[in-house]
Image (cartoon, rainbow, N blue to C red):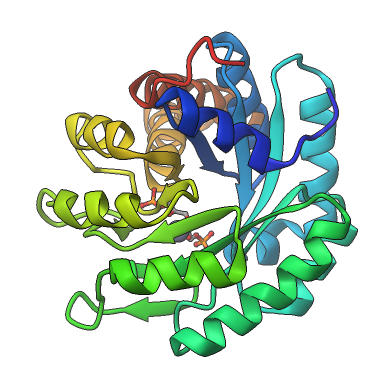
Length: 284
Ligand code: G3H
Ligand code: 13P
Ligand code: ZN
């Protein structure tokens, strides 16, 4: 079916206490893997493109690949811009058929973040495109911006309340102890803070940096109100490990399909497993 706005997927998830997986793509094989996994689990799904993915593949390629993938299945698929850096980039993605954009104003002071998010929402609403905002800093490498563990700070529930009230954003990304990329130890999530945010905010909550977070912690976050869970690193690990194994086992292999085929299969497996942890299986 045609790409759908993200909002309808996460509002249903919030009501029914599960989360929709938002999986990062960089190329055709990963787009295919995301859709194949979601179809196998009969799950709604969000395909998202980071700044790195846009630089690597191009907005138009990602939009075209995703449109074809969505049209080939019956489950609902949304296409989302991950960590959008500017008003202009959000508009460019909307123009290319994205059904959802994230405007990441988390580096701005609260007022500036609110103003920028509202500006994007004003246009997005007209075209029924969903908008995700971010409050607080998620640790690790956030696209081009490196946020050291020290500087990373968690979302203030009062700020979250004000941000959601003034912007009427469709989804709110929060910082409660997760980080992008691989973790050095086991991440510890601030569930009390999440509870406090959920008490004050009815907007569906997004958990970034979810690769490497133990399944039980993800389940707990979902039970407390997280409705969208972002996964990139775990897909990269599975994809690259499988491709690497082919090359290691057979150093003379020259056919890229022999590497990318198993990589795609490995990505499908990890995405299916995540979908089951999020509880979105059977919810399409
Ligand atoms: O937002 C987090 C992404 O995992 C960053 O990925 O290297 O494709 O920009 P990227
Ligand atoms: P991970 O790479 O840690 O899964 O984070 C993904 C993410 O939050 C994308 O926005
Ligand atoms: Zn993120």
